[in-house]
Length: 449
Image 1 (cartoon, rainbow, N blue to C red):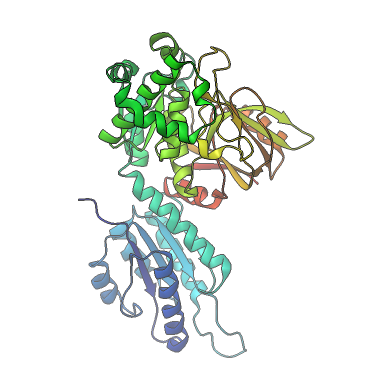
Image 2 (cartoon, rainbow, N blue to C red; image 1 turned 90 degrees about the horizontal axis):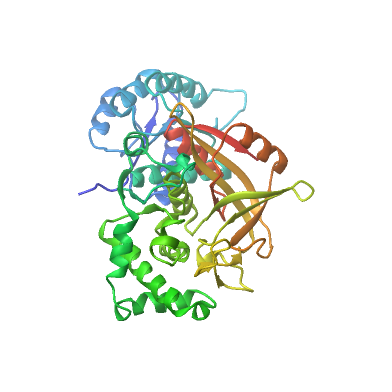
């Protein structure tokens, strides 16, 4: 059985400093950490000796370490923690000096942070997180929330199962996964099947067996009843096949081939099926881009809602915007309220159903991609912005993002750096969590803000 996610709070102190201040801040820190993550393990009292530290470490099995300097403590304390848990993400939290009045230095915690950081850096190849301040400070509260959230995503990825359905089209190798890389780097388990397996499964169903899936899609969309009956019924077959297969195999994210397979071998596109899955919480990317699907899964888990997946297709320098588009796989929940999740047909093949709408506006948006360097290492692209109130820009689904930084710079520099053509767009500000997660995986970060 998989153990529950656990945060371990490790507060160092030396008894010759001002214990009244240290204990007050210890209690406030415990309260904040428990409010942030219920399953936070805390000691009964400040850790005042290495013997006490070793006894406490015997009781924890952490997925995140919050190491705190309540007062100065030498590097031996942090060294002992890292010796045991060097592969566990770390947040080093250092308290602000409570009083500056020309008399004694009450905590000297900041100096202790340097000792701890020096020891942590000697053990860990990944960057660690650092926050400075008291438990009631907004920046401290935000950093702790963001770090715990990112650590939980890292933990959940250890049980994430992904799937590739079919193959990437020729020239789309950027999305083709290496199962060993996914497992070694991110802890993700991957499996692959041929598209014909799901096509054959879909063909095995009767119309009656697919009624529930057809009704579900009718309730989510606008205009599905106007699709030719054969395509509408075959869509329901595909929807049932994908939904059933992902549940039976416990798949959290998938990347499915689309063209030409489903047009030529089945006669109905898979686009709208992927849209349904995204609303059901199974992140689904098209064109068999598995790294895109994992990017979507991370963004979806951090934002707690469906995310958009598409290509950057248009730059407007005057408006400082980038338009993201795809043929019609966006989740119904992303549609504008004035149109709803409209159903149409594929822009090139003229076969439906596909999704046809512009996405809703959002005051916060983040463009995100896990990219793969030519040498096989991974990198995170993070672009802050907001989603504008814009109608559908082209046939298919689209969203217009006004970037916080210069959109023209984003386009020119990402093209010159060889980034992939598919991106997840989250409708929430998850940029800090993504940066922290990148640190936990020791991935380089390219950020625009």
